[in-house]
Length: 290
Image (cartoon, rainbow, N blue to C red; front, side, top):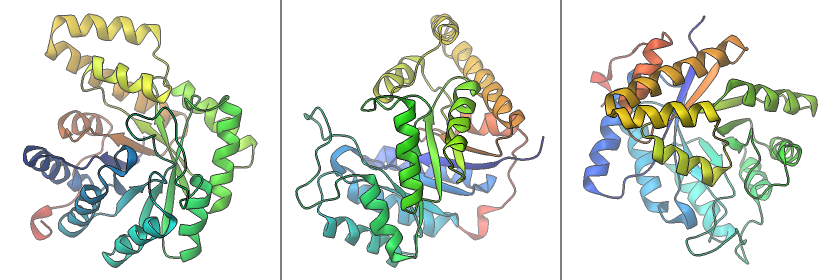
C-alpha cells in the first residue's frame, strides 16, 4: 500500500486556550507534509475574522498550503469577494467554497438580498478571478436539505462545472458508503477528485451529534461497539476509535482511494496514530519554518 496523500481540517479558535491547541495541532501535523489543511468558517460568518487570522498564521508559520472555508451566509457579494481578495493578498490560493449553515435561530439558509444565492454562484465568481484553487463539499449520504443522493450528485456536478477542482466529503462510517457515492458521481461525468472526509472519533456522544446535524447514518455495529467502549472508559473508547478509523482508511485505500482528509477537531493525537498505522510518517523538520 503506497503512502496516501493526506490533508487536515482545523477550526478557528475562540479563546486563548483554544489558540494554543490549534497551534499545537498544526505543529504536530505539519511534519506529515499534508497536501493542504483547511480552516472552517462558523455558521452565519461568526468566525470570519478568526478564520482569516488562523489561515494566514498557519500559512506563514508552518509552510503548508491552507484552504480557507468561505460561505454565502449573511454577506453581500462585494463583502465576500473582499474576503477572497484579502486571502489572495496574504498569499492564500485555495478556497473551500460552501453554501454555509443557517445562522443561529434560523431553520434554513436564506440568501442575503445582495449576496450569492448559492454555492454555484460563489464558485463562478471566485473562478472568474483565475487565481484560486476551489474545493467544495460533497455528501455521500443525503444532505439534510436534499431530496436524496441523486440530487446531491447532480448539485456536485454543477459545482464542478462552475469551476471547482475537487470535493471533500462529509464523514461516514463505512467505506461502501463512499464507494457507492463515487460510482454515482463517475456515472454522471464527474471526473474531479473526490476526497473522503475521515472523522477520527474523539468522543462517541459528540460524533453522534455531529452525524445527526449533517445527515450521516450511524450503523448498528457502531452504536453497539462505541456505546460499550464508552461505558468501559476513555482508554477503551480511544482504542476502538483508532482501530475502526484505521480499518475504514485501509478499506478506502484498498478500493482505489489515494487521498484522505481528516477532521481533526484541533486534537492531533488520534489523527497522528491513524496516520502512523497507515505508514504516513513525518517527512519534514519544522525547525526552519516555525
